[in-house]
Image (cartoon, helix red, strand yellow):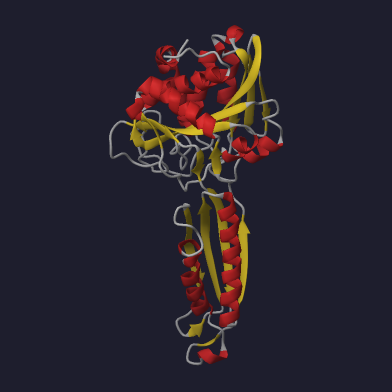
Amino acid sequence: MNVNDLYSEARKIAPWMVEVRRALHRIPENGFSEFKTQACLLEQLEALSIPRATERTWIVADLRGGRPGPTVALRADMDALPVTEPQGCPFRSEHEGWMHACGHDMHMAIQLGAARLLGDMRQRLRGNVRLLFQPAEETVGGAKPMVEAGVLEGVDAVYGLHVQPYMNVGRIDTRPGCLNGSTDEIHIAVNGASSHAARPHLGVDAIVCAAQLITMLQTVVSRSASPLLPAVLSLGVIRGGDAPNVVCDHVELHGTLRAADPELREHLKARIRAICDGVASACGAKIELEINTGYAALMNTPAEAERVLGLGRALLGVENAAFRESPSMGGEDFSYFVERVPGAFWHLGCAPAQPAPPLHSRDFVPDEGCMPIGAALQAALVLDRMGMLDPV
């Protein structure tokens, strides 16, 4: 058995994967509210005779092989986005205002496809396969509570994927080390003192203070981080003021901090704190800073990223499987799985042609032709980790 054999088998079950994907697409749900999604997945796992357990809305299913060996986990995320899907799709969302606009419906169907491929050879498997169906990737994060609940106990390696419309069907990419940056939320309150706008010296202008703060915060990345290490600080919200003739006494700023390096992440947070303190002192204001910790940076195990690339090249050709030059600053809570065990996350091209609408867009329409590739490569990663895959 090699990766091309698996792809041949995956194409045979492609109509079933498409049917499952479209059923899931009709019932998009918010994080930790994926009850219909969970029920649909449980029904499919039962049909595949794979034992499963649930907690909250996640699922852990164990496919036990007939021979001893490692336990290899595969992960698929389950939740959808608050996006209204356009009319015209024959399997359009039945939950108005919600849509699988990030491809998680495809991730779940691909994982079930890999499970079916591996289930057909379960007696020959040199180890076990753990299927992790994870809620809330788009919101508060379901990976961390799953890890804390022990879903990785006994697991030797873990793999996950994400469809990507910046690549056409038939292409993949990944990266050793950092693939996705960390994601922290920044919330700032600037408190001054109100006065008549004609007598500003009697107040403390929170708007002027906020303006100085915004300017200084732009130096956090440009002057506090190496240009060779990706990082970004973006302020997306500013609120303040009640009237044009009143000195504002309160301004709120909200933004996000992203970094590809864990040490840099902590350094930048320290710089933000120091700048807030300094600007507050200079302006005579009080600045309250809250940094809400988000997802950790996703750090692929180098050897496992190499495994993904090697299998991808064996199936798709050297020109169609590549290492990304730089990380994405988009968040991905698969990071919590690879913090605990070796593993890799990779990207699967899903566009029929370029340019293609991006993820999280109401116009996102992935090509279902990518699904057999995803299922075959995920199954191949399991078999290769078990020492069962023949070279091409």
